[in-house]
Length: 395
Image 1 (cartoon, rainbow, N blue to C red):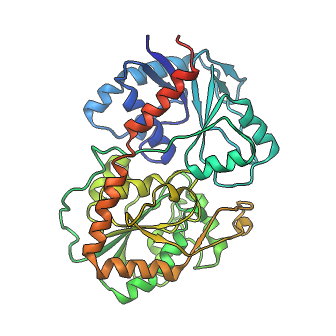
Image 2: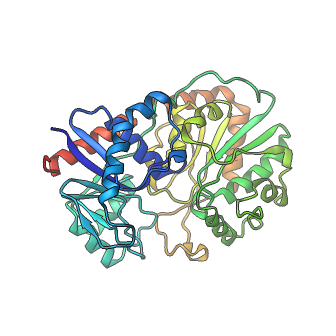
Image 3: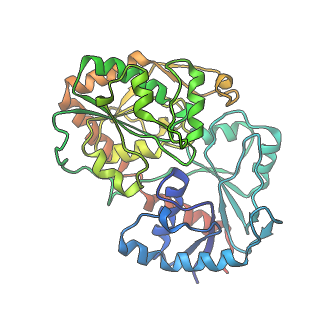
């Protein structure tokens, strides 16, 4: 009998947690040992898959709808399910209380801070097991005396994200990709500051951005850095990337804003790029967007801090080694030991290295693709399955 397991977060093709849940559902759709469903209503337009994958997801979606029909509404009393529940456990200061618990409840965490309060630690200790999304997160929890922590990294879909030939539509440009929701932690202010210098030297440079998310308001946190001018917004609340870049000295012809693209459309974009830049101040996980760039064989510039440390191997990227400790209070995120402030000058230097020596960049991109071949969603799902079957009762 297949073990049922409930994924207690939203499934989507447009943001990290959603992509995580969607890929677990896909990997387990034909697994002989495990049967997944989600407690959160699925919005059809939020899932972008091919017809075969949609057929494979049919039982998952049907079972999920049945479950959602008997669950209490959001905001109502908690309920307990007699099957394992995977939940995105909150260990932050707000301590959001999930409505659903399981037998057992398996918490998954992507901590952005090393400061975890006593109530959060007590919550973590009450669970039989917590899955940390990076070894940095696991070390934090171990330092608080928690011994119920395992590390399972996110994955990539190798059928989508793999090296392949570019179309060459942008062969006359030098394309610099930057992705991830726009916020202080992702450090797009450093990207703009560095690209401004680089683009002034190289008029063929094109900054290609995938920064939009459901939480565009988080972009205002970037203003606290003072590194560049304030983020600009359209009247409807969406970030105006071109206007923000232009007001900070980047010509509008050197910026291409991709808008909100589903995950499966990203590989074709990434293969047209020359380099990707991630000077992120912190990653609680490994940075899924960076992993997907690396899996496509794209040369990647990575800050050497927090979850990025799980991706960096010898010469599989261009690491940003100059990491200055910072105090995140100015951005309203609390104390942030472990975070790192990348040097704008070092980002420019690494961009120049890629621009000057394309052969070396391609070699590092190939090494990146080889390292990501070991980190697939199949591997992630199999490790989680073993964990679930070890803890979960058969039902």
